[in-house]
Image (cartoon, rainbow, N blue to C red):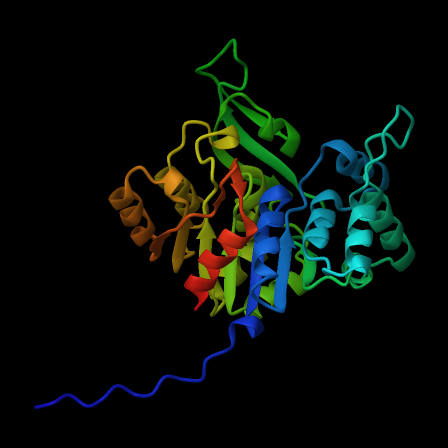
Length: 326
C-alpha cells in the first residue's frame, strides 16, 4: 500500500524577519552581530556584564554601573550603514590617548554611563544609543547588575604548576597562564534583565559564541533566570565555536572539550547545531559524536578570514549561518 503523502509544511518565516538572539561579549560577539545583521532585521545581543578591566573596569568601580565596553562594541557592530551611522560608530569607538584622567577611556563608554545617569534606566539608555546609531537590532545586558567571574585555575602561579587556586575577576581569569577547571559568577543569583529573558523566549534562533569561552560565553549559562529561559525557549539553539579553540582561556583544549565544558555548565540545555571552521576540526567523527551528545548536528563550514587567521570573516560567517537557518 502506498503511504499517504506527508502533510504540507507550515508557513515559513522569511529569513530577514526571523528573530535571532546572540549571546556573548567582546570581539567575538561583534563578529557574530556583524554577520547576523546581514541576515535579519530582528537581532538582539545579550551581552556579558563581568568586565572589570580597562575603561569599563574604571567606570564600573567609580560609578557602580554595568561595565559599558562590551555593550558599546555590540551597539557599534549593529550600527546603520549610512554615513550618519558610521560617523556615530566612530565617535563611540574613539579612545582618548595621553596620560591624563581620560587616557584609555572610550568616548562611547563615557556617553553610555552619562545617559544611564540621566535616564536612570540601563535598558532605556542602551535603546537611546541604538537609535542614535540607527542600530539594526537591540543590545541588552545579560543581568541587571555587574558580575564577578570566579574560576578555579590550575597552574595560575607558574611556580606551582600543579596547584589549583581560586581567581576572581574577568581580567585576571582571562590573562591567567593556567588552565581553567571550573567557572562561576558572583552574585550566584543576580538580578535578571527582564527584556533579555523575554527576547530569548520570543526568538526563532538563539546563538552562543564565538568569544572568550570562560569569560564571555559560559557566564550566560550561569545566570539562573537566563539559563532557564535558554532551556525553555522554543527557539533553535546554535553554538558557534571559536577559531582558536586551544589558545587563551582554553589553552590545550580540543573542540570536543568545549562541548564537554558546555554540557557540564548547562546539563539541561540542548543544542540543535554546532558550527565549526574546518581549521578547528582535525577529527570530524569525534566532534560530530560530541555534538550529538548535546542533541546537535555538526556543521563544518569555512568562516575564517582568508588573510587574518583567528578572525571571523563576516560574509563567510553570514553565508554559513544563512545555510543553517534556511
